[in-house]
Length: 62
Length: 258
Image 1 (cartoon, rainbow over the protein chains, first blue to last red):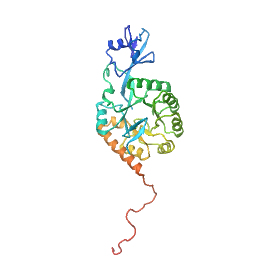
Image 2: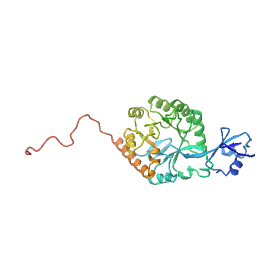
Image 3: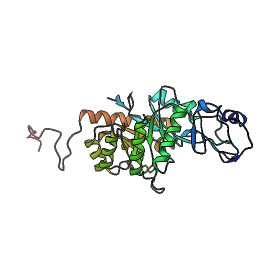
Image 4: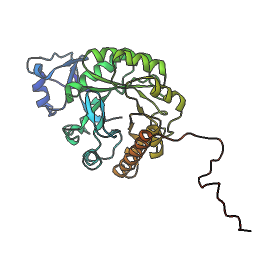
């Protein structure tokens, strides 16, 4: 699957993916195929090979 | 009074600051503590694995400050709505600045798409702050949709040209009853003072502060200007005239001078 456009081989739920890739679990949001997945659903949401995952946070902006 | 009510909150500083291009996010904390700036705009972006993994701007924004989520990067109302929802999920803040870029040269906002996004986000429970080209009719339509303020641009983002459409801005200030925040193009403290003298409720400044040689002290300079402009506006500015009006008395002049 693609995570922020990087090819990642992975089988499991969103929370485990974040831990595996060493992303923070706080202050981020996760989109799967363009859909916002709420934090309380990260453990029950199992990712598929063809999923397009984006991990987003906040940056400086006007 | 520097204190005013906006977006369901009491805010004590009419200088809002955008955090883009800041050389160091720790300046945000200094602006909050030293200058009592309370509202900070931020943007939503993908985490860049090399640059900012594990390092969030949120670590530098004091908990009691107000975060305004900017939907910059959105090209239409659907993207803006999604960015707002993502931003709220991350921050818990329901203040959203709707910025929908209509074209890339001047970065002018798409007012039509902005109205659509505003309507949806007000219904979603957001406090909505639309960034618009200064157009009274658009501002009125947004007021009807229930937005918390309108944010007309002074001049293009990052241009530092100040308020280039004074008549249009003044018309909005005069004709709508929700707060007006001048956003974009304010390059100098005198521009900010001018905005406040015109009767704007607040200004949002980013580039002029963030890219200065000393952002904290430049924010301090803008802070003075905003206070000065607002105070003068509240007292009431004098009428302009085309001819002189003597300051010293013109009677009882000394007669034996020559």
